[in-house]
Image 1 (tube, rainbow, N blue to C red):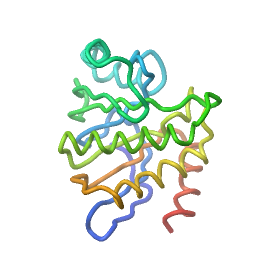
Image 2 (tube, rainbow, N blue to C red):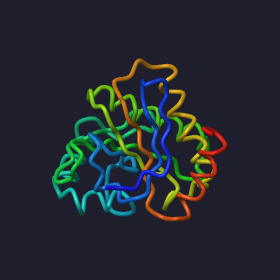
Image 3 (tube, rainbow, N blue to C red):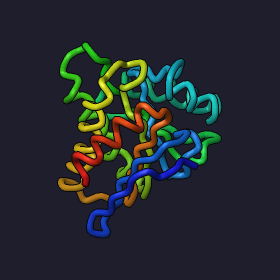
Length: 186
């Protein structure tokens, strides 16, 4: 389990947390995978999820693409969690830095992930700093978009979610997200 670094409760409706740890060990109902549109989990967070969760996650992902086509930024796919503690993996396609309209695409993939969590009727979700790894999205910019999008979702939607956890692995990401957290939620 990760270490909770920051936590903010909003009128008893929901809690947003900032944590450091291994996303694949999170005991939340779902975790978000930073995926590509083909759901080919060959690198980064996606590779770690399949390594720990088992080949079933890749098999279900491939079946999803065969049935539904490529995954859009705004419409994440989902699979079982395989051998993970999480029951589900929500596969969100984050933007590649430099591809154009990155801010809107990151917003859409975060908002879409939360919407899918509600469709699955779950209470808790953990997500990484989507697109800040191999996709090259600047961490500070992503932190601001991720936190603001979570807040926007709860302002606009009637949600069953009780806990949204942003789970970061490395110290550099934690430092950036803590600064943006202070700026937006202090």
